[in-house]
Amino acid sequence: MKKFFKLFLSLLLAGSLLAACEENDIHVTAENSLKWNQTSVTAKPGKTIELDWQSTTPMFHPELLDMPEGWTAEFDTERNVVRLTPSEGAYGRHTLRLQTLDANGQVYQAFLPVEMMVRNAAEGVYVLNENSWAPGSLIYIDPEEELFDNVYRNVNREELPATPQDLFIHDGRLYIIAQDSGLVIAEASTMRKLFDKHFYDLQQPSHIAVLDDQNIFIRDSKGIYRYDKTADRLTFVEGSDYASKAPMTVLAGRVYAQSGSLILLEKGQDKVNLKSEIQYVSGVDKAPDGKLFVTTSRGFFGEGPQTSFVHKVDPLTLRSLESHEIKEFNWEHDMESSRSLAVFGNKLYYSGTRTVIWCHDFASNQTRQLIDLSKCDWAFPQGITYNTIAVHPLTGRLYMNRLSGFGEAYKTNRILVMEDKGEHIELIRSYDDYTAFPAGVFFPAQFE
Image (cartoon, rainbow, N blue to C red; front, side):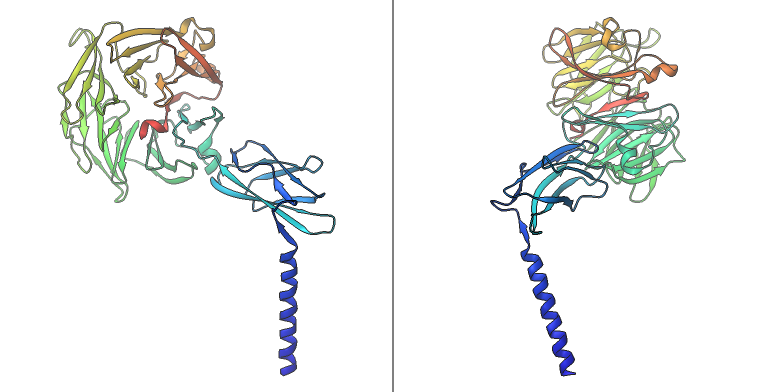
């Protein structure tokens, strides 16, 4: 027994010494050894980047350790370069471990922090595609203006519901509602699906606004419902009958919608809290001073006001604080599902589904026509504006989706990115043939 115990101790000691020797053979990055030429890197899904390293002695058999699943690496040993291609997912911060051998077989390692690009950056842009009674899709344009197509499908390996109409971002989660009564909730930074549900009691839902898990407001052809996700309970909001097929606005924990007048919905309440005296409401959005901008259209069939108005509205009383008459055009909400007004500071933009872009400066009470796209070769002059103009709340850039036509012609399309230069519109860039009947353009910054 004693001999066996001594033999066991000898083997254990020998193993420890061997492990110690192996550890001593690993040389972590230090002066006069192996090091990356980069100090840190930002990576994007599907985009190949080149990384290179240097060493004071020849190194052989390079390999990358601890790579996230799905990432690929191609080595050019003559140039000491690796071509790294990240996959979808694995967002956040990672550390790449480069391992090589010298001529004596000793192991060297170098470490490089890699930050995987996070979606939902404040400067980013989403374009939601309805498709044609088929699964929708989601486009993301990052702050460097690179476009990533089908970002939801690529991460989850499944499609969005059919004919998605609206997108809302709350508390790091992205909510998409579709006309086939499907709701999808995804993690905004990764697109990873967190929740989905089909509402059999809803009739072609079109818009969504979120306060928290107990207060998810969904508009359908009957009116507005409050969905309590925690209790899985859907309740009709009394007084919201036939709410307009238009986006809702959230300000200071309250929801504002259109139903002829402006209506106010409160957290935990299943009835309309307040209705405005303002009628023929065609649009609502946040003003820069904590108030609301509310637009109205002309009356119908000769009834009501014969001109449009833009109001600055108190969000608590829904009373107009200041109003401007718009004589140049009719600020209406027609067949579109996106907003009829786009706000950047005190500048309010309008296009409807037409080709002319207007701007009303609320501070100076001046209205001007910026451009008629039917006269621009770069905008499919004989084509269609599908949904409305949108403006980035941080950059002020204008986004518009143009189709060359209906039928198969919709596959030839263009996302226009423009800037308001004061007296004219300047095209900054465009993205061709990515959309499929786009429901709208959305900006993470607009939900903050």
